Length: 492
Image (cartoon, rainbow, N blue to C red; front, side, top):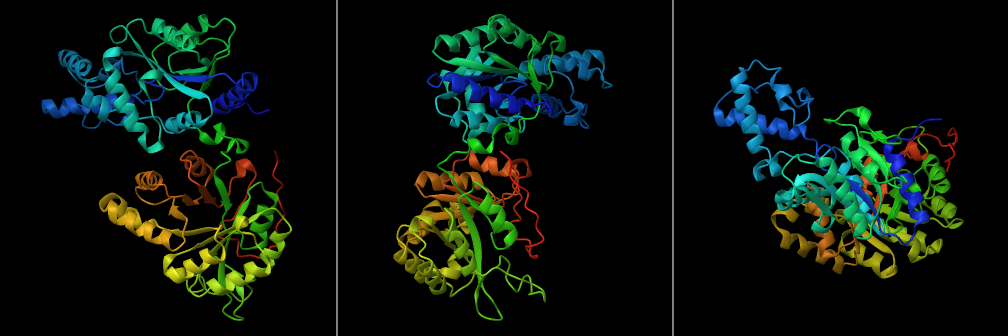
């Protein structure tokens, strides 16, 4: 049996504890330096700054990968350079004097990949809190919060005074005592501390000594650390990768986010969608260039010319299949002049507004078309992509809002943004601040999908090609005959 990853273990432990203590305020504690922050970046930045200020070239060829020592053991790193001993001592003194100055705290600190997303996930859970338990001195409180919140802004992670425990001593003094005191501090404040993540074995050992019942699961961030690995308490879970795909199972997805399976344009994708737990399926509606019928096809016939043996699924056939299920339909109008034809099909198959999501580009559907869709189905989702507004959000915010308000006057009640859009996060945050519903689309792999989930948009459209969840969506469609497909059943 394959051993669980540390993130999967954390997820299971959280679920079990929540089941046992449904009303308790659960807390997960994180160390900062070496656990949230990759301190190699600080060492790299400060040594490069020494060269710049002193007009030397000792670290001209230094690479991040060269830094394999703890931030408190930079003397070991300098010993590998051809630097005179007296100069090494000068560098160490300068390094110690500068590395915790605000300039370096704000510019030289860099989070480990995925850690802020993990923190965001737990901050989203009901009655669950993330605390910080650090050996940094109280004098660094303001700089620490500003720096971490600056780093966390993109992922909507926010840290506050209430959840930050710091040392009453000078830097690096009595750290193990501080870690144990931090756990007690949050316990006395009424939180049930269920997990503690730290890169230093000695710190984990100190916490284990005040937890004889072993109610706190200890996690060793296996990065770079000073104390001996042999000091790790028994039962400590070790890991290095902060992997959302191991932390978040499908069953834990927020129910308020509507999920749409992209490209149910052929038998392969349709059968996968129908067998899945995803409620909304998106089809791409075009005109058959031969018989002038309404068909399903993602690519235009200009971009992907008709092949001699090409077969396609008719729009009517798709609606017929969906009518016998509890699934909902997202219809992407790919061409001008499709509005009336699509509305006729919706009437023929009596698709209720609550199961209807109508999407189209402004250049295709136009004002008249959107008004007609919204008038015919006032309680349906009516949407258009607005990726083209991204530059305006950053440079002409009022103009962007004016355009969005014009679109809403047409009956559009949701706006779609490509996951690959440059400056996506400030764009999304501004849309959210204005109160517009947002759909994120072109979300291809599972990791990206979960990164989108923790932003909590109104909806996400994805290919659902997630083998880990036993989904095998083909996105725009296989373009092949469907009968050859052997369905791979999704397991719980």
